[in-house]
Length: 109
Image 1 (cartoon, one colour):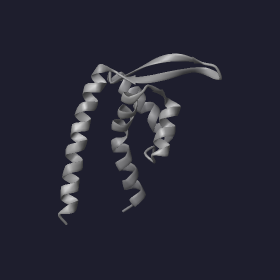
Image 2: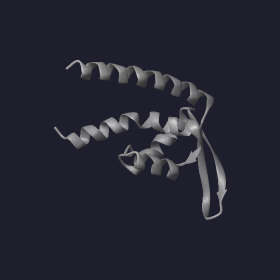
Image 3: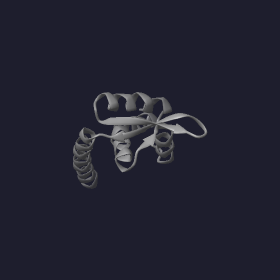
Image 4: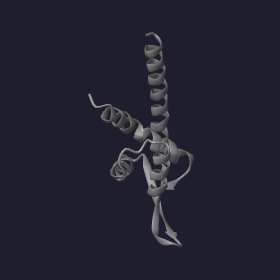
């Protein structure tokens, strides 16, 4: 069994939840998200975030706006839509239930 692979899969499993949570607090562009996720050791591969952002946008959970940058090309700032807020609320409930179940199961041993 490959421990690093298992750890990477666990991080990937919560990445969508973390991205929505970050963007619910403030809009951000992809590089900001990547930096925050790297700092928290959640980003497995940088190439993972762009397809995920596109999928979340296509699902109506995220939207974006373009903003001109003084030091380079325009930036795409992502933010959570009303549908995304409802989805995130359900994810939070699911996360709390899951964390409670895992804590119960692991404390019983």
